[in-house]
Length: 176
Image 1 (spheres, rainbow, N blue to C red):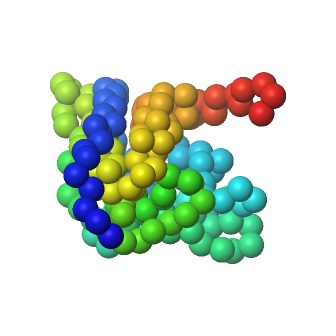
Image 2: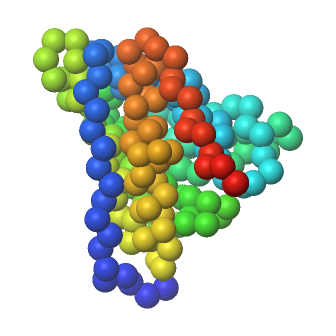
């Protein structure tokens, strides 16, 4: 594989949550299945029954479908409770392929910083997108949008951390 010399601008999303740092970190990791929509999965014909994020270095981010099949789409590469979490993103730009090779995985870094009493600034940076090769631009467009990508997902996370039900998925465009 040849080295990519083009750097793709990282996706950065920040939200201030009305909850303490520890609550935010635990919600992100331990309550993953409550805020991550099961409709966001790999493969077209799967119904997801479980979502997991293992809170440790080397832990897996994965889902399980109705057949019992597991799909590991991420690996925890940094875990520093309650301040920082980094997940290697193994999902490839076609959103049907997983590549566990770190050289072909982007990274999602989430940091949690006190923003006053009982408030937390949560910053998500999805970087190293150029590792996805020729599909890096389309990956950036898919996960970087606020209608179903990281902007939407971090808002769902904030909903749950603040004790609300997560907002519903945006409606699919008509004719799709």
